[in-house]
Length: 194
Image (cartoon, rainbow, N blue to C red; front, side):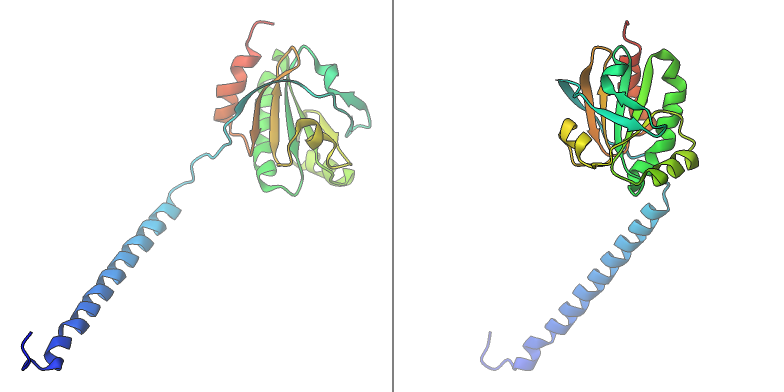
């Protein structure tokens, strides 16, 4: 740099550089917003929790169902049982209920049942939910809120546990279950030789 070059000539490229960087940022932002807008208009894909393999004896759980009958998991030995822990206020629990009902309807004559254990809601709310969602599988009430969670060692809703005919928990998941996951993971266990 020459001693005779005025400082004002050195500063002229700076505003042009800032202007160019600003235009690039505006263009990038526009592109990202358009891309995000296109994604939000795409139909959502079916989201589902994926099960984790398990291998432990089903805990002994005894509760009262919505009909006032005392029930125990051991009463279902010889069947494939999907235990589903849920609550009426839980959005993913609500979302999976029609799927669970449809799957139950298809396989209930193959020695399969779902036991949906409600997590501490007032019984009137559970009965209203059962009626509204037209649920026909057994619904048990856990008024203590933590009795079943302690038995299955979870604090998450929804949580599900698949118990085979011998009383062994074979799969467990946290989160809503899709029909594809039910078909892929549970149907083969239902169809195992009895």
